[in-house]
Amino acid sequence: MRLLLDTHVVIWWDRGEGLGERAISAIQEADQVYVSAVSAWEIAIKASLGRIETSRSIVDVVADSGFEELAVRLVHAEGVRELPMHHRDPFDRLLAAQATAESLTLVTRDRIFRRYGVKTLRA
Image (cartoon, rainbow, N blue to C red; front, side, top):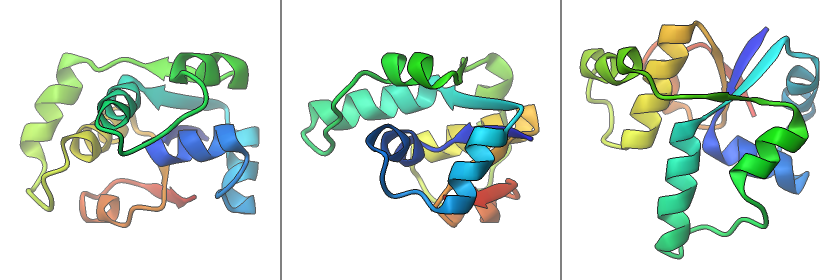
């Protein structure tokens, strides 16, 4: 299985809290686990606005966890154009486009992704 972690999942993974046993097992047993540059961007913006706190950089979390970085490619950005406007969150819309383009299962608690047709695994 190839997984893409939603931003909150990366944070919870690093804190060792908030994730269900099924999600933890899936992450541990996955063939590949990706963290998008979109999540780094989201954390940076929300941290600068005082809306989120993290104890470590996402770069360290990804490296220490053995995850892989997923860069934002042109095909991902173009994929956003094809998505219906279910909501306006640019981070979620780009994650949905990435999951779709790369055939990844998105680990998340956010139900909005199902409306985009993204395969999800409940965090």
